[in-house]
Amino acid sequence: MLKQLFSPPSDIPHRSSLGRLVNQSTVLLMASIGTLILILALFILFHENANATKGYRLRSLERERSQLLLREEVLKMQIAQAQALENLQEDGRIQAMSTLTPKDSRYVEVESNVAYE
Image 1 (tube, one colour):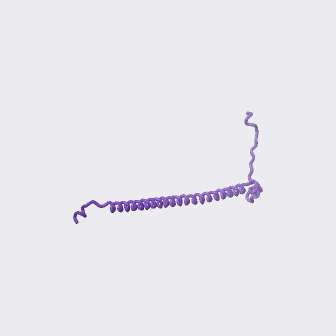
Image 2: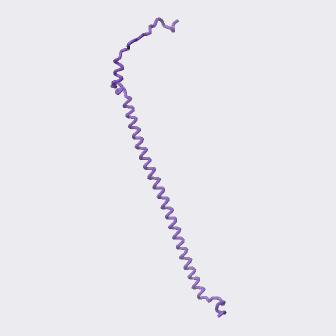
Image 3: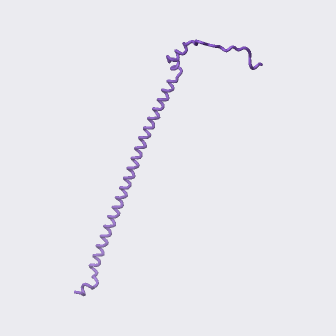
């Protein structure tokens, strides 16, 4: 019995255990490659999601910018219309100024040309 325990293993169990070891290593290699592919796919998914979110934010900011530029143009047109000469001439306060007559008016009298003297 001691001889059987310490005797070298026969070729058949060695080959079957070697074949089993090769099969196990192949399965382990395939599982690790599959796991790496899955992890890389998840990283790509998160990266694309972040880029899409940034793109959406950028488009919304561009839309808001164009709306603000349009509003600025409308306000500039309203300012130009308010400052137009026709509006100023039709303003009641300005028309009231032209009808006023000065109460105490003094005119400067020119006696001689200062440049000739």
